[in-house]
Length: 129
Image 1: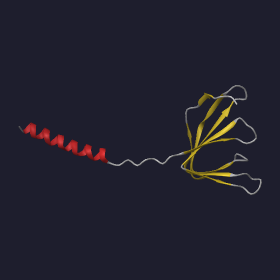
Image 2: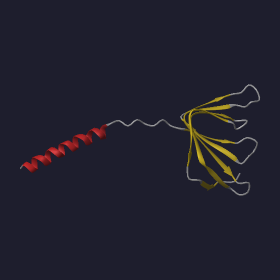
Image 3: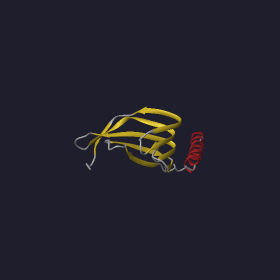
Image 4: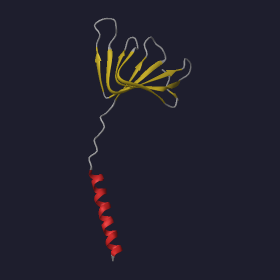
């Protein structure tokens, strides 16, 4: 009888803890914005940019428009070979709190906490243009 009572008490405790964890609200992650920006001057390079928010600042002179990316920004470079349709994703991913990308020059200014992560290199075949 003691074993039955002890088992019942343990089951009640487990169910009470399980129901708390199951009923907790999970906050939805904000949708991330994805951009694929070609490198200027016709190079076979493009940048993949991911951020929480973005704003394009038009330029009134010849310096070029600036794409301002904010919130856990990731920048990856993809290089396509001159012949064929094979592209290589850089094994380096730049992470920053904020990035300003100049669309005319391809210059990237980083702000806040900035670091680079090494990932496994990826080659992929893409449709030729």
